[in-house]
Amino acid sequence: MATSQSPCSNRSIVRLNATLFPVSPFELEAYGRYGITPKCLDVSGRGILEQARDCDAICVVSESLTAEVIEGLTRCRVISRLGAGTDKIDHAAATRMGILITNVPDFCAEEQADHSMALLLSLVRKLTQMRSAMLAGRWNDARETCRPIHRMKGKTIGLVGFGLSAKGMARRAKGFGLRVIATRKNSTADDPEARGLVDQITDLQTLLRESDYVSLHLPLNTETSGLFDAEHLSMMKPGAILINTSRGALVDEQALATSLREGHLGGAGIDTFHGIDVHGGKEGVPPVHPLLELENCVFTPHVAAFSVESARDVGLGAVENLAAVLSGRWPSARHIVNPQVIPRFELSARVQSEGLWWLRILAH
Image (tube, rainbow, N blue to C red; front, side, top):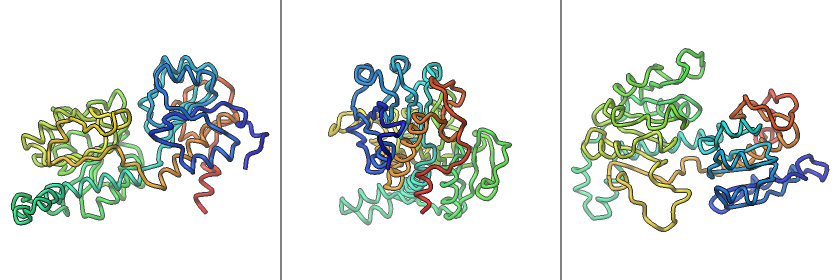
């Protein structure tokens, strides 16, 4: 356990999203190891500055951190994201202010792959339609109205992006006898793991033309925002299925609804929406969205990352990141989102290994 001598114990750490995403026991344990008592807040925008202007570190789940907010943080050294995506944090502003942005890039790769495959299986086997027919006492109708159903073995799945969650999806797809093709930002990079999982690395247009199922595994940035617009959706095979457990804004949701309604696409499995704010929306008020009206769309409220194990990994990892910076050292290079930053306060040599205390604990 940490003592009063810990370099983190006299620092001011703010933990945002305290109500929607309460501090987990794993995160609390990690704070305790460094003698940290975080100030848990549920504020946004200028409210962050009113209560956290002088903090040394911010730990955030889903709150947006704009340039205005970041520029007003007079002492902040690190913004530690409890998760992987950092599209809600202004990277340029943080870098300009000498603030590190850190994340836990692989905390839910297995869960995302599980969830993506679950959505795909639900759509292929038309479970939503069958459930509705069964509840209405029309099980004979279900046998007719849910046809045709096609065997998965021998079909092609296209993975757009080939990071850890996509590789997890590829392993699962191989178990179902699917041909796996994928896009990758650096298509020529040597990746021994990919050679055993993917039948072909290709371009997006070829993937869309050949895939019976398309699963998105991309970060959200200026290059990928709105990538799956009406034009790209029209390139997909008639009857194809689209799965998105990455970021809602990757897809033009109106165009997707039109394609599903008109019958060009056979189905969609959506865990992340652009047009529905599952973090800031009013609880108990049913959302209005064209995709929610369609039986050939299976949807969940941004929960693909959920598991006890992923909560453990992200809580321990995020605290380790901020503790490294507050202790005067660089975090693991893989966890630094803006590596070009010149830190506001000088840091010692970068950590080269992944031998972090929490990883050693998990290994045992």
